[in-house]
Image 1 (cartoon, rainbow, N blue to C red):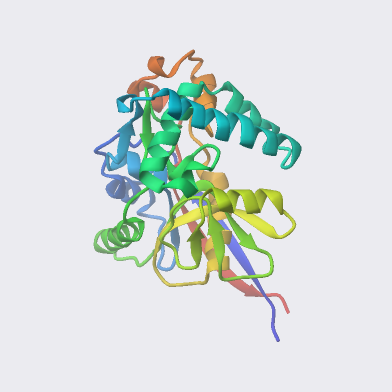
Image 2: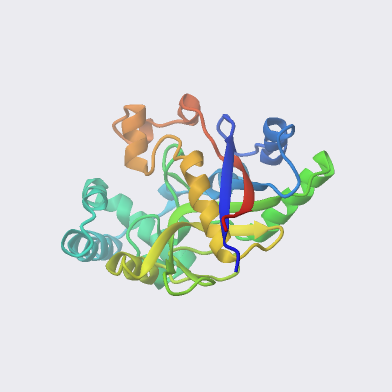
Length: 292
């Protein structure tokens, strides 16, 4: 039987920040219109789309009581801090949990419980796909409620504007873990509408980190519209393109503060978001070649 090798070549263009109200589809057409071919994969960051569509939330509106702080303390500062230190050896995540004010952790937990339920509440950081990076003040981006529909409408928009049929993949940096013994199923730590991806919330995080020899980690494919090429290929494209999309001002809110040289979130404004180039969308040209 012939063997095949998948080749993924990524084209990346600089963008400005996608503020709420940005026509992100037209921005993509302006940047990549001359470079897109039939069959290409347009890979887009979910948090950038959420921001452009105004699908964000001001966490300062959430009242935190002593019970919420106690629960956040028990889950993040006690349970996960110990697991991450003694079992998973994730020093960077431990420092992030320790350096994040307990009130901020409690607010995030309360919103995660409201949006995603207990299975997302128990996950450390970025629970339920809620993300605080690359946003000012105490705003967070929320997971897209209809990611496949947005991918489909983006695909249709590009066809109408350019006459090109592309595949549109929306991804998020939160991890998805695929069992090494299975090809067509993966366990996500956040919601996803992609076929074969099962949202287990914090349970997926626990399994993937506790048993790295049994799972391979990928960014999460959140939504997809196009020719179905199989989950392994979708995951491979997502992982390759994530490196080119990058993290903008930082991988998390504290890293964003460090990049901006700010002391607190209250000092971060909308104008700060454009202090670096952003790469919210890239084009992947995928080719299959025989190696036998």
